[in-house]
Image (cartoon, rainbow, N blue to C red; front, side):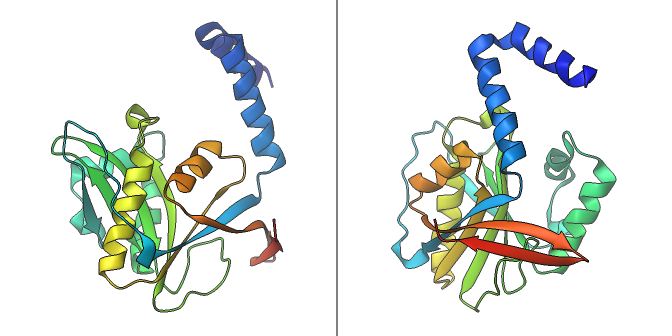
Length: 211
């Protein structure tokens, strides 16, 4: 408790009262809605390239095995995380058939997003057909946030999925994640439902809200 209070006081000193109030609001919102997600879908055949004004050319790299990832790139996964845990997580995802997509310029690794077919990573909302795909765990690294890169990353992935013949993509985000919700709206994802997840006796239970 003392540590949390110290953190808030320190944040107040560095960022001011308005930013601190917004931070507290986000913390409370996360706590209240921690198990609720907004599930979106996208009819991939409708996707079009988004033009992004950048001095560096942005491109996608696709990785299907851990061995495909350079040591420099994989080190980005370990910022603020325990290396051993993340390495195990990456290995498990590739074994299930996941793909990770990197957004890059010639000199910078900007962010990534995962995708999987048929057998979704937890939480499990529903099974997928052969021409459907689930996108998850997207992240733009801290130094590049707030510049529209998440929208570009998702758009570029959707364009590639269209080329590969996929018909529909799904993605979910926490109901409190306003930045991600805004980014998905720019990509023209459509809201399917709000879902709430529980884990009971090692089983995933999903409650659907048609909102």
